[in-house]
Length: 636
Image 1 (cartoon, rainbow, N blue to C red):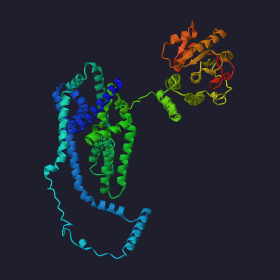
Image 2 (tube, rainbow, N blue to C red; image 1 turned 90 degrees about the horizontal axis):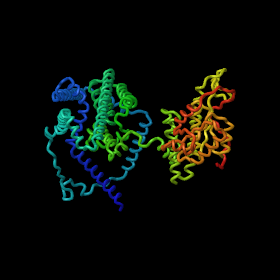
Image 3 (spheres, helix red, strand yellow; image 1 turned 30 degrees about the vertical axis):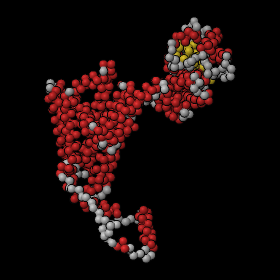
């Protein structure tokens, strides 16, 4: 076996072993790690308050102790208030017996609905079948059946052991565990706040001197994300709970503060917290009120608040502060719930944020960022190329449309289509792509480019000034330029193949958008190309080619154009070119200075720098780039 493959397999096996051991430790050490996790989370929340007290000249132990006592006191008051409210609800339940009985009677009352009629028909048929089966004689019981249990060895007396009644300590067992976790969390939080710099320095020392910068960035990033996320979540949940309190107060539900506080706490639990917060007061309202209207109002309030909060408030407030995808949040909630139970739901997002931050700074853990992060893992042009390889034109077009929402047409061509066509050309040169696939990609991309150019022409026509009769001047193919200065004319010549021709069309579109009269000449013989240029008499000529550019053909086209018109201005476009443009210019023009553009945006700047508007002449102006000449199968 190859030594490198063996080493790689051993490394993967070692990583899997470490991961399994880590999960086992998380599960077995839950009693210790749960309070520690809450302590770190509370420390992120309380550290700014401690720092503020330190700026007021309080010693750190006093500041940390004051903050911890205030925090513990607030938790105790809230817990006691909720407990007393629950006791009050339990005492009031007997007074709501009449409403509960009335609603149960309503639910079980006969009705003339289709379901009730079907149910009665089924019961009638069942009764008739029972009567038919009972017409036969019932056989007398056998001798063995007549004997009671235990009367013979075949039926021994069953013995069952009854457990002893549970004592008070056993009943308090379910309360002692959460109280112990809460107490340990408060104690750990105090010491984390007291020695937070010392803990930070120890973690940095464990990473080693070589990873000092990387570890510092990771800790700073994790602290910033978690602190901001948790503070914003507290603010949003406080507002949510306050609105619930106000709504329930005006509806008339008793103990409205309890359900507002419950809504505040439950929203910290992903996915299941909001339904629990909504169902609890809704169920109580069924017992409190005699009708159904109040219950529907309460449930509607929670639905409305959740829709507004989840779809409008949280996306704008949280933004990209966590760096987690929606699927990652769901997976994290399931994983931490499986490891630590329902309490793990509260810690799922902060702990997963720490893992994603570690993956973004530690190369060996990069897969965590790829799997759980919300950043795109491949650039848009690679996604476009991959979708075209899969013959998925719809999704490829969606990629372009999404980018056009925030970028210009030239920027979309530069960032997506031209790099994708460069990948096509590279794969074709290596023999990885079949000619049929290349033709499909070029044809489909050409159709998308034509559609985008048509839309750009429509937008340009809508923005054009109105004519003398009120019609849009830009929509009349025989209208003259309204400006006293005519738009400069530019001819774009593809150097070699279909990809060059396709990008020439893109360049013509963006030049037309920039105010030039763009003319695109198809691929043909060089003498035909020179004749077409002489007929057009342009102000500027663009040679368009993709790497690897056919330098020899570009040089022949350049020399032929220069012989025909020594004063002609020529610019070469080598799109998505990463090498030295000066060397390429020297290979094409040999001795003459030649400007090289590597992007469409750069090409527009070069065109604006080389030509200037001149006095208008009375000649028609077409709306879209022209195609001049007849394509020829033979290219010199």
